[in-house]
Length: 121
Image (cartoon, rainbow, N blue to C red; front, side, top):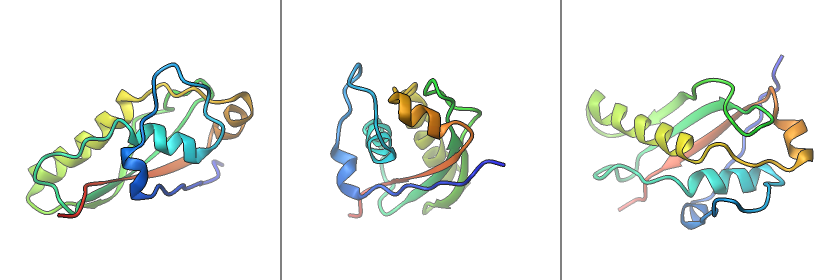
């Protein structure tokens, strides 16, 4: 049974960048920062968020497609779908991530969550 693990990322990490080809990631805070570096919220989505749940393989790819587990988006179904699609795209655009050997051993089979937020206006 996969052990559920969650990591939270503060808003300051939204401005962090993780260059391609950088050193392997050593902990989940670094992974979160790397993934959020690809995030660009949809226009007109202030004070919105979506939490995605997903699992990694040791090679830094996903086990399967991410799932939206919490959605807080103003607007209709199309607005919610656009926001979830943007978060999913950001996640996929940053893959694969490069794990350190130690982290690679610990991530496989676990479930992680990451919240994608838009800035409050």
